[in-house]
Length: 555
Image (spheres, rainbow, N blue to C red):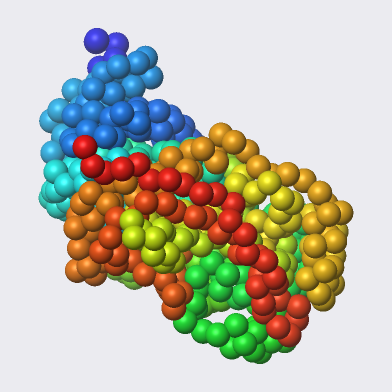
């Protein structure tokens, strides 16, 4: 213990020696740069270890999510298994070492007021998102006590920064329920995950403060900026690698969004007209997209670029939302909060633009897929769309089309996911008409009739049907609707005004309903194939790909 204490004291002395090293008035030496690199590397390694531990320690079992109190299941999970227990032991050790500073105020950190505002904006937005989601009929639980605890912890974060650690753990635990039952499906949390990683990064910063005494806010802000840059750069690099500009059909995203419920109140003729209207602007839009995504490599070179780059990112996200309904509003919140941070510290700005900072930023942004697991959002846009709609058959035999929002909090899954595993017939594109094969993409956009589309399906013959996820999806619908039949009052209409926006925006079709007086005895899943030939948007096929009998609610 004496050896550990001596090591910790040495770290504390070194941290005290380099507080404020990179203020504008400081003469930076080679030794200072070494300290900077060591600081960033230590924090980066600690972040990767902490994030790895959280992913394995706080997401509980399927049975755990059927229980009314998740926090008890979380505590049980933390003391079972080698990895959860080892991580918990390290947290206890950090708390013991830093016992005297455990409840330090925000004021101990540099630029404390601005830092507090930034972190609390992230905390309050994530608390809003995962304390107001709809009752989960799949697990037949609302977990309301856990939601209240999440809100309480978010308030305590405003009081003391330490509470961001348990807050982040509970948030991830609540979030974990949406890994079931389709665990192998594409994540729909790309927008929210950026805020989650920001909280994980700040948790590590607080823990390092306990152990080493570090107060250098610049380290956290620097890595947070690299995290944001990595999120944009990987899709931009992917677009360059696939010669994305050589396939200038970005405007197909509009009817693609329409096929998934975006602007559903419009008529097909109106959507076709809007698509033709934006067609001449597609190349500037694509160039602007690459400018934003690849510009992430350079926005840290000069301090003033922060004030230019983040507004461009916000304009980009609003443009994507208007085009197809995919709304990365969580990223916008983070970028606005960071702009606010930089504005508040403008009289004593952080030094993020030294040669070493710039070099480290280039390495970390380019290597984001390694340390951050950034998502590669890249595809070719086409004019063929496979969408899904859901028909409920009531006890009296009435047939009604169900609004996707009825399946909340799985609404984004039902709206976005391309359930190709349900189809025993060839399926050429993913959601929104996306493909990764340039030859197929070219052939599709050259097609002008449904017959040509059907011929391409035969040419690229494949059978995407997969019984395992198909059974999981059927179980999701059967369990969800069965519980909904028993107590649908758990999601009153007024609650929808409290729910945070999803990542995928949409509108109900005119013939859809979410309010039924009778129990639903069967759900039919329709695959709707739509096609835009350059002038006309039309439905070319409609077929049932799944019929789900709902278990009786009596007895």
